[in-house]
Length: 353
Image 1 (cartoon, rainbow, N blue to C red):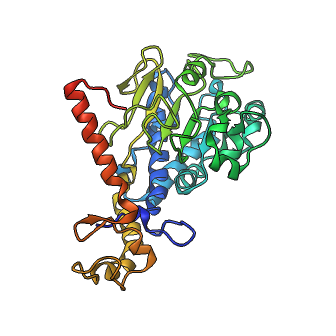
Image 2 (image 1 turned 120 degrees about the vertical axis):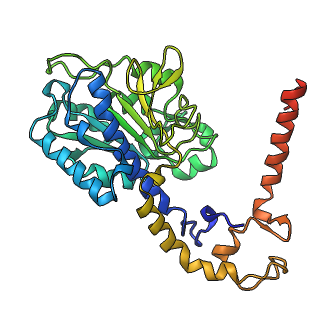
């Protein structure tokens, strides 16, 4: 049994599984452009976003890009309602997920600005240009005691940092594409209270007039990271390919499938690469195939410590050998015991720490 995500080189770079991030980003971006059209229509606005299909409707990403390019031509020609003003897309993270999403996004008429310049960009550009920014850790994480972001300090003491994303960046975002890595000890990108505050901010600057007015500036979030109650505290349930979107109502703290009604449009599909199946599979297979001979040539009768045919890349990813978990995966047994204990607790009403 091999964990493909643990197949890494000496620098920790994923050799196989990291490939899925690119297609997750591309699929997520196509998804949000498609459903943004339906959401805006439900709010009373007919826009060119209507003509972008879900990602699984396209043969490959090239065909999808052509569709997004056509959308971009319509936006450039002024077919997006002028009173909406410039839409803003915020990409969080700089890894494969974010880069894949940006690859699709760049087919639109756009300009990238520094995260702190979003507010100014709303005054500088109009409905014919999509404003975008890329947000990484140093942009939204600050020490609680003051000072600037320090990567080493943060990795050693993440609890000493707080997020200013909700204060300085999110108020000017129309769509957030979330692709950051998050750990339980890290500050959240957005909390439940942040969501309440953001959905009170109106859509457009005063210089735009028209109707109907959008209920709030933040229209949609595509959480490609899909960490439940993670960097986005209110993301409590993944959506699916069959039902990819839901509306989050902050008043009731509940989500409902669809685009009609009050709330924030959410997408959080945990198997997004499956929406570009042929391309994602071929790409993954091409990365995996060089390692297959090494995997199948191992002798299962030997202890993993005695086996000499494995490289460090494969050996470090082997989950079990000779009926036992390998050293790096012994934590799985601890998790199993924890889960079993919780199940017993639920049936006996005992208190478990």
